[in-house]
Length: 122
Image (cartoon, rainbow, N blue to C red; front, side):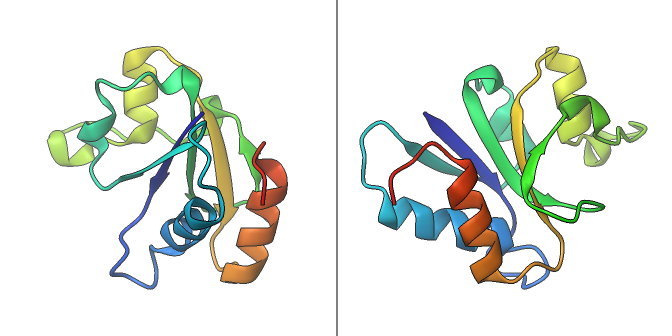
Protein backbone atom coordinates (compact mmCIF):
# COMPACT_ATOMS: atom_id res chain seq x y z
CA UNK A 1 0.00 0.00 0.00
CA UNK A 2 1.22 3.50 -0.82
CA UNK A 3 0.28 6.46 1.35
CA UNK A 4 0.92 9.91 -0.08
CA UNK A 5 0.60 12.81 2.32
CA UNK A 6 0.61 16.56 1.86
CA UNK A 7 1.55 19.66 3.80
CA UNK A 8 4.40 21.96 4.66
CA UNK A 9 6.27 20.61 7.71
CA UNK A 10 7.56 24.10 8.51
CA UNK A 11 4.15 25.77 8.79
CA UNK A 12 1.99 25.12 11.86
CA UNK A 13 -1.07 25.93 9.77
CA UNK A 14 -0.21 23.27 7.16
CA UNK A 15 1.68 20.45 8.87
CA UNK A 16 -0.94 18.27 10.57
CA UNK A 17 -1.03 15.55 7.89
CA UNK A 18 2.77 15.54 7.84
CA UNK A 19 3.00 15.05 11.63
CA UNK A 20 0.36 12.31 11.64
CA UNK A 21 1.86 10.36 8.73
CA UNK A 22 5.41 10.59 10.03
CA UNK A 23 4.25 9.10 13.36
CA UNK A 24 2.34 6.36 11.56
CA UNK A 25 5.40 5.63 9.43
CA UNK A 26 7.56 5.21 12.56
CA UNK A 27 4.92 2.92 14.11
CA UNK A 28 4.53 0.78 10.98
CA UNK A 29 7.80 -0.52 9.67
CA UNK A 30 6.01 -3.00 7.40
CA UNK A 31 7.43 -3.39 3.94
CA UNK A 32 3.84 -3.54 2.67
CA UNK A 33 3.28 0.16 3.46
CA UNK A 34 5.18 2.97 1.80
CA UNK A 35 4.74 6.55 3.01
CA UNK A 36 5.74 9.46 0.78
CA UNK A 37 5.53 13.17 1.52
CA UNK A 38 4.28 15.17 -1.46
CA UNK A 39 5.53 18.74 -1.29
CA UNK A 40 4.70 19.66 -4.89
CA UNK A 41 1.60 18.68 -6.87
CA UNK A 42 3.81 17.92 -9.88
CA UNK A 43 5.25 14.93 -7.97
CA UNK A 44 1.89 13.23 -8.59
CA UNK A 45 1.94 13.40 -12.38
CA UNK A 46 3.60 9.99 -12.87
CA UNK A 47 2.08 8.28 -9.84
CA UNK A 48 -0.72 5.73 -10.00
CA UNK A 49 -3.24 7.52 -7.80
CA UNK A 50 -5.83 4.74 -8.05
CA UNK A 51 -3.57 2.50 -5.95
CA UNK A 52 -2.65 5.07 -3.28
CA UNK A 53 -4.29 6.68 -0.28
CA UNK A 54 -3.85 10.46 -0.20
CA UNK A 55 -3.90 12.17 3.20
CA UNK A 56 -4.30 15.90 3.73
CA UNK A 57 -6.13 18.48 5.80
CA UNK A 58 -9.53 19.24 4.28
CA UNK A 59 -11.59 22.36 4.95
CA UNK A 60 -15.28 21.90 5.71
CA UNK A 61 -15.31 18.43 7.27
CA UNK A 62 -15.93 17.74 10.97
CA UNK A 63 -14.37 14.29 11.35
CA UNK A 64 -11.47 12.46 9.69
CA UNK A 65 -12.68 10.25 6.90
CA UNK A 66 -12.57 9.41 3.24
CA UNK A 67 -13.63 12.21 0.91
CA UNK A 68 -15.12 11.68 -2.54
CA UNK A 69 -12.64 13.15 -5.00
CA UNK A 70 -15.49 14.44 -7.15
CA UNK A 71 -16.39 16.82 -4.31
CA UNK A 72 -13.01 18.56 -4.43
CA UNK A 73 -13.20 22.17 -5.45
CA UNK A 74 -11.54 22.66 -8.81
CA UNK A 75 -9.92 26.01 -9.34
CA UNK A 76 -9.80 27.89 -12.56
CA UNK A 77 -6.45 27.43 -14.20
CA UNK A 78 -4.85 30.68 -15.33
CA UNK A 79 -1.25 29.62 -14.79
CA UNK A 80 0.72 26.68 -13.41
CA UNK A 81 0.40 28.29 -9.96
CA UNK A 82 -3.31 27.36 -10.06
CA UNK A 83 -2.62 23.67 -10.75
CA UNK A 84 -4.07 21.79 -7.74
CA UNK A 85 -5.12 18.29 -6.71
CA UNK A 86 -8.68 18.74 -7.96
CA UNK A 87 -7.45 19.71 -11.41
CA UNK A 88 -4.89 16.89 -11.50
CA UNK A 89 -7.57 14.31 -10.64
CA UNK A 90 -9.77 15.64 -13.40
CA UNK A 91 -6.86 15.68 -15.85
CA UNK A 92 -5.75 12.13 -15.05
CA UNK A 93 -9.35 10.85 -14.90
CA UNK A 94 -8.75 8.98 -11.64
CA UNK A 95 -10.71 8.56 -8.43
CA UNK A 96 -8.14 8.21 -5.65
CA UNK A 97 -8.88 7.42 -2.02
CA UNK A 98 -8.52 10.70 -0.14
CA UNK A 99 -8.43 10.60 3.63
CA UNK A 100 -9.23 14.05 4.95
CA UNK A 101 -8.29 15.44 8.34
CA UNK A 102 -10.41 18.39 9.54
CA UNK A 103 -8.65 21.72 9.74
CA UNK A 104 -8.04 22.68 13.37
CA UNK A 105 -7.93 19.12 14.74
CA UNK A 106 -5.47 18.30 17.49
CA UNK A 107 -2.57 16.09 16.49
CA UNK A 108 -3.65 13.35 18.92
CA UNK A 109 -7.24 13.25 17.68
CA UNK A 110 -6.11 13.28 14.04
CA UNK A 111 -3.62 10.48 14.67
CA UNK A 112 -6.20 8.29 16.43
CA UNK A 113 -8.88 8.76 13.77
CA UNK A 114 -6.52 8.30 10.82
CA UNK A 115 -4.99 5.22 12.46
CA UNK A 116 -8.46 3.70 12.86
CA UNK A 117 -9.32 4.31 9.19
CA UNK A 118 -6.18 2.80 7.65
CA UNK A 119 -5.58 -0.94 7.20
CA UNK A 120 -2.34 -0.86 9.21
CA UNK A 121 -1.04 -2.39 12.41
CA UNK A 122 -0.21 -0.03 15.24
